[in-house]
Image: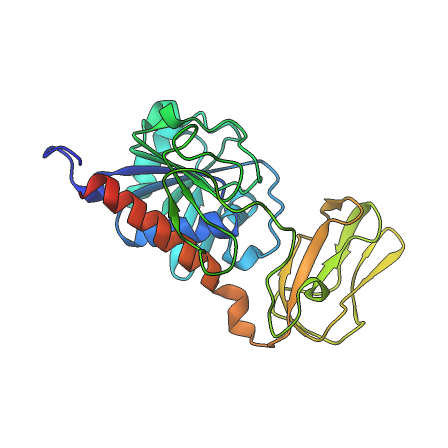
Amino acid sequence: MIGMSKKLNELVILIKGAGEMATGVAHRLASCHFKVCLTEISEPQAVRREVTFSEAVSDREKEVEEMVAKLVESPEQISETWKERKIPILIDPKAKVKDFLKPDVLIDGILAKKNLGTKMTDAPLVIGLGPGFLAGEDVHVVIETNRGHNLGRIIKEGEAEPNTGILGSIAGYTEERVFRAPAGGIFKTLKRIGDGVRANEKVGMIVNVEVRSRIAGVIRGLLRDGTEAWKGMKLGDVDPRGIKTHCCTISDKARTISGGVLQAILERFNG
């Protein structure tokens, strides 16, 4: 429970990572008027770029469902960005800004499937998304990220379900809806997110090797043109439902995970 000197909307929340799931969490928390700040690496490799605040690293600002993240150069610019009602994002792979912000909540949303350095002492409430964290040891709370009955569940003892490597099914398609790098090299895109695609249609090139979609639908995710890829790397995905608006709205999975995070915060500070 927070002291009388601090209101809920004064809580400072630092999120490590600005990919799809972290963006969903940041969007919900900022919508609830928490002071949210994001950190990211200098060259993000998000696929679902229309719904990732990490795009602000390249474009300076990124809007997702009427919420804007803005790239800032220094911690001193964070407060001014909050006054603009935007979410500040810093290029800060080690999240050193935590020493400046002294956040009430730290959320590891990198989804690396392992802990890259987050500690329970980083903030009064530390939350880890997905596998790689042990609740009660290196974080206070883990949020389940595996699709299924427990998606978004708050785990206060133990770990999330292990990474299965199995993609979620959309209209009966799993791995078929993803296109991967057939070789290592620079990815040259021939399509854009939101474009329709036919089965076996060429969507890009790596060196002189064609990249083709295995199914028909709408391109929901796509790496930036010019990204250096390794063999087998996910380059993009196709939504077989063919609904273009799904490409630029937060997914059901991200919304569910963000709900678990919000509940964990309220349980800790509004109890």
